Image 1 (cartoon, rainbow, N blue to C red):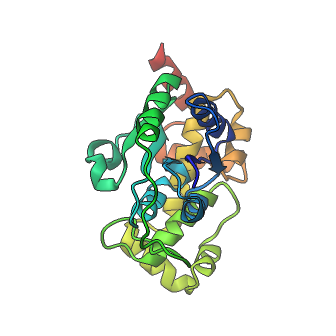
Image 2 (image 1 turned 135 degrees about the vertical axis):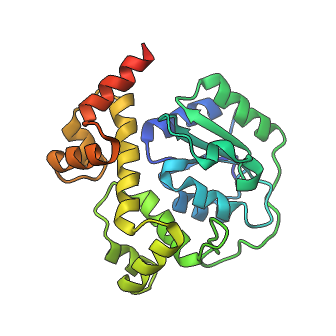
Length: 252
């Protein structure tokens, strides 16, 4: 058993949570990873009291699986506040098996309070249904195991070279069947979902860092800055530089 598992694809964000958690009490055991799927694997063996999941790194899918067994592990979900309002911000957290939802940038005191509350009453994992082998993914009502696995894989790897064929191979179904099933269950096709994930990440980088657009394009999974700019404007109506200017102006 460990105290805290941290799953975030940003090393600085993981380090932030680690520093806060380490200051709560002595000899606290912390395990970190960079995606929701890895968090699932760790939780099956480490049985943490608290798991901190990043929404952009497959957090919702991981929360569904981790909470699906007989466990009292507290789940804290983090996400960058990019101004978009989604179902996760308006629906009751209990309906998503999440104990607390924290918008980045998170104040140290707020993260400390959230961790302390759940570590104080830390409970052990129950013996339960998460068992061995591949866990049963059911991230949303009506979603098949294959598509939930695919979404978790995409959410953890969208910044890398990834294709419809490679994801289909990962979940062991044909590419044509995967394409049809993904569109049916998710509501958008594979490329639209992948592009949305990359753009969400790019928007955070644009407004939270001073890195160049070339660096951001590559970091977000786009091969070329010019292509990134075209896609960004098609989806947002602005160039990346215009978006950065407007967001920063609003903060003044």
